[in-house]
Length: 409
Image (cartoon, rainbow, N blue to C red; front, top):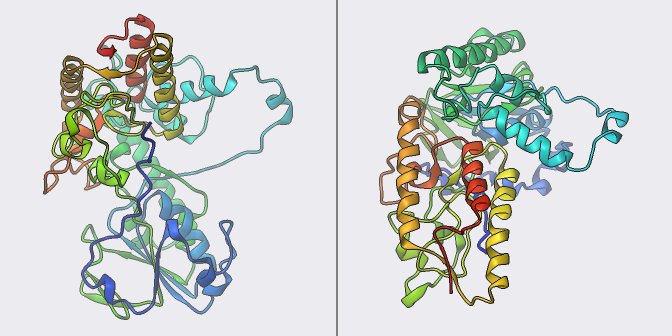
């Protein structure tokens, strides 16, 4: 069982001069509390005399930025692309309501959440947070036009209009919170909802009202250079004492490289060689030529906003295969070549559905479909339909009970 994770290797940006910086720098996943003070709840008291640069405006940056803003002498937020910020608006849990929940309520809520954000019609929204409220308002547009649930759903034009209304509420909220108009305008995302993973926070936008916080909008260009004393963006050098990289993880390297070791299959062929340029699998969980080997994660599976559910659904799918393996007293279980070829065809058809949507997005790890080298691209990595659609494919396969495309020996 290969479960090394897609978000395990921190990614630093390839900015010229990054090794020349004389101050302190670290990735958010390797936070240096000795330098900043505090802990994961805040209290970064050692930054009181420090000028800090934060590179990144994604999900991690949104969490870290308010704490840095509160304690740093000065915080510079370097933005390549704005992010979508909804209110988090968490509420206290009613103890009586919690006590009334019936066994199995967790799985029911998880699947209900997935259905709503996939654009499926649902009688009730069991989660009712801003994920589900905003996605439901797309009236079937699903996860940013990622759903193919019904043939009689909204047209692409209707989807885009619904998406625009959601994103306009995001932009209006920025105007309501951020005092300086030019800063507010720079923070506004002008793209479709799911081009970038949306974020939810009640303090990120307000932190830009602090006099010690400055937004450096690079207008898509990013930071051009790191100097011994700071960062250069738009031809201007910004001296800083510390650089915090909220730049995510390496998700596009070849699978075997992320594993850190070779998986050897039939005839001595390695998974590194088989998947060097093109991924091929059955449901993203097994691959021909590698018996008794299963993969968990995002290898030709669905892209879900709830990663925990993604893994749970994969485990639910592999469990009966492994049980059958032992019940038969088999020594090998393997995906057939024909089943693998058929799944590649399904992957290609699903990918074509989203192509126009992704090409209209700003650059991200998924909208950059054609990478410069021979690494697998988005069309090979992620199933193009909705998460709920993919989970249904797995369910229907299991319920058939024939183990189609899987050979036991």
